[in-house]
Picture 1: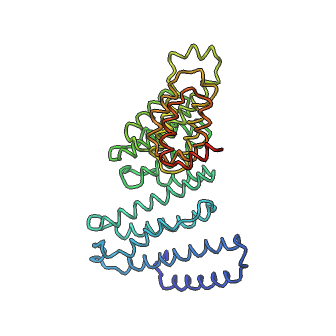
Picture 2: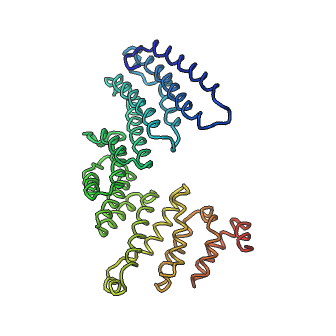
Picture 3: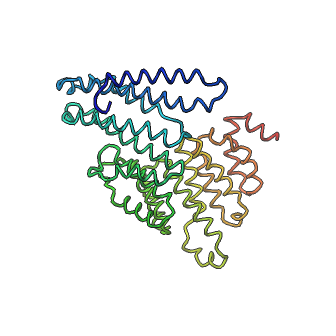
Amino acid sequence: LSHNSVPHAEQYIKHGMILALQRWWQLPELSMSSHIPLLHTFQRLMELQESARVIADVSSASVEYLRRSSNFNEIRDVLETWRLRLPNVWDPLVVWSDVLAWRERIYTALLSAFHHFQDTNATMVHMCRKDKAWSRSLLASVARKQGLQSASMEVLSRGIPTTDLSAVGSLSTVQGFAEALLEMPDKADHMSGLQLMNSTDLTFSSSRDCAEVFRLKGSFLEKLGRSEEANIAFADAAKMHGPLSSVWVSWGCFCDRQHRSLQEQSTQQQQLQQQHVPPWLENAIICYLMGAATGSDDAKRSYLCRCLHLISDPDTKSDTRAPMVAFATNATKVALPAWLPWVSMLFTTLLFTSDVKMLGDLLGKLSLYAPQVVYYHLRT
């Protein structure tokens, strides 16, 4: 396929399919682990077959045929299918690299074929650029989640030296590179990440992308020990795009860590800094609740448990009523179904707080929404 020898490639692909099927029938029926390598092989063979069709369509097309994007519906369907057909998250990085690296070669071949028709066939060029950058960012994200930070940075470093940061996908590549630098233990890497965020051109970026860049900037500033500047960066990110859940969660984690570090200080130091320290506890509660309100996945809603722990923590009982007021004011912004797993903890929190009415309002709404859930925990 790399040399446009599509007929020979199709013959080898068919022969590979036959051998893989023969091997499949030789495997035991009850052993699942022995089938996994063959499943990966089937995916590679399927994508080779689709790649052969794509290369055949492009190589045999005339100049007038390449000018019209409506002639490439089949190629568009293949690219959309590739976005959905991905390895499992727990699969080794080698499997992800084999699949995504081959796709990147196909994207490069398509971009070279449509290079002279960017004005008349901009749709295909836009799709190929976007999918190519997305594949690289996805591979780096998988490497980062598997703890392979150096591999993640190596993948993304191929996409960093771009002269046009307004191009599709380049900003997501920069963000992925910054996420990898955040996981590195060296302060020099954190300083490099901060410089990367400061040098990123946001002229043509959306408010969501700008907020994400400022969120990462705040995370780097926190790593470098510059808490005041980090707090300002997180606040700017929330102002730019309020519905972005990751901003609120990162800001809440930052405030929570600042509150815990303040608690570890001696009583004398706390009294000296009391006039100048922001209300970290109240800010953490508000940010966690806003993150749960704007987020949709269970990972962000799990921070509701942390909020209930903060308002019932014995170490904060001597403080003012501000934490409970912050909780009661913003708890109603969270969808009621998100509170259902924490009904028992809401009842437990009543034992550690004197502001029963504030929690009672939330429990009253939950009893109207899901009376059986509330009644079950009352019985137990």
